[in-house]
Structure formats: structure tokens, C-alpha cells
Amino acid sequence: MILMDAIYDKFLVRYKEEVQKLKAGDPKDPSTTLGPLISQAALDRLNQQVAEAKKQGVSIETIGAPVPKQGFFFQPILMTGLEGKEVRKEEFFGPVSQFYRVKTIREAIDLANESEYGLSGSVHTANEAHGLEIAQAIDSGSFVVNSAFFTSPNAPFGGVKNSGYGRDLAHDGILEFMNLKLINLHK
Image 1 (cartoon, rainbow, N blue to C red):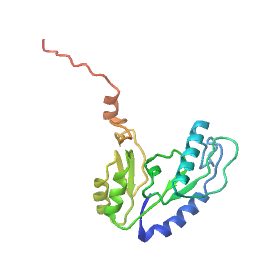
Image 2: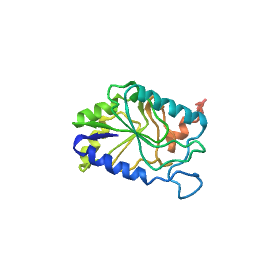
Image 3: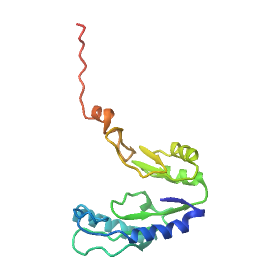
Image 4: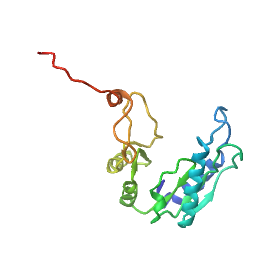
């Protein structure tokens, strides 16, 4: 998350409070809000990435309620101090939150566009028109303003850069999975 300096500290406190409320457990249980990773390999990979981040000097803070020891659970962590570190270029597939503090909108846009990935993003602001301007300046496959991101079967979805190419869902998605053979019916 890229946060403006003016709200960074207050947001961080509230974020930690919300993560504390997560309940780890069986993903089939409706009361579970934090499930396990998909496999031991995914858990090992995430632990390896976090160890590398520590080596690079990233600040890592354990947050949230403890997770079960059995299964592929990963304790949520908060990473700060990522600026200038190589590990910031990686995707962490698990409950790993990365926080960046910026002073200007231009700095936020530049930081977002520095990523080698671009599946989806969001911007939250009191000025929705300005949020749309910011969204247009960020290189991302899909983007929302003042909303949580979700996909709809009615709208195409897809990423840019190392997050894929093309679109799935809707009419565009159907075309992505078709081999069309054009024939001339006027012969």
C-alpha cells in the first residue's frame, strides 16, 4: 500500500486493528477470514521471501492473532522500509502487507508504476475526479476508485506487464480462448 504521509500513521494503526480481527482456520468454515496457503511449497516460498527481505534490511512486524501451527498457515506480517530494496519487486502470495510512505501524489504514481506487475489497483480519495486522474496515470490492467476491487463476468479482466496480457471474462475473454478461422463465403 502506498499511503500519503499525512494519513500514514493513523491508517497503520487502524489496519493493524483490522488484521487482529482475522480468524485463521478451515476455509470451509464460514467464520474463517484467513485461510491457509495452497501448499507446503507456497508456504516455503513465502518464508524464503520473508527471510530474504530481512537480510536486505526490511522491517518486518508480525501482526494479527496467532495462526494454527498445523497446515499451510502463514502469520500475517507488515513490511516497511522497502525503499531501495530488491525484494520490493517481488510478489508475495500470502498475508504479507507492504507499506510505503510518500509525500506527493507524483511520488505515489511513480512508485506504483515502478512495479514490474500490473494486475489491478485502487485509489481511495475524498476527491473522486482526482482519483480518476490518478488511476489513469497508473499502468495497471484494471483499476477502481474508492471501491474494493472485484471481477464481474460481464466485464473483461486482465493485467499488464508481468501480470499477463489479454483479457478474460465477457466477450473479450471468449475471444482470448478461441482460434478463429476466417472463411470467405463469397466464393
